Length: 91
Image (cartoon, rainbow, N blue to C red; front, side):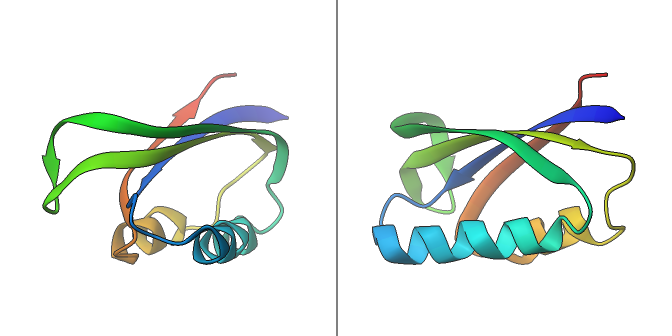
């Protein structure tokens, strides 16, 4: 079983309810990959503006699975409420 870390940076202007909907949507995109732990880092200032935003709301997920759906990162990029993402394979 491979392990991964996913960090999402979302727009800080999104309401809490909408943020939760987006996170559930992203979990649906994962398919068979399992989220083992979630951390909400809260809102932090960005080093430089991204899409005219000076801050972002950070989330970190620890994941386990064999393969990701082929269009997973494409969907993250296409979502306008997600400013940046980082997906790392840890093992």
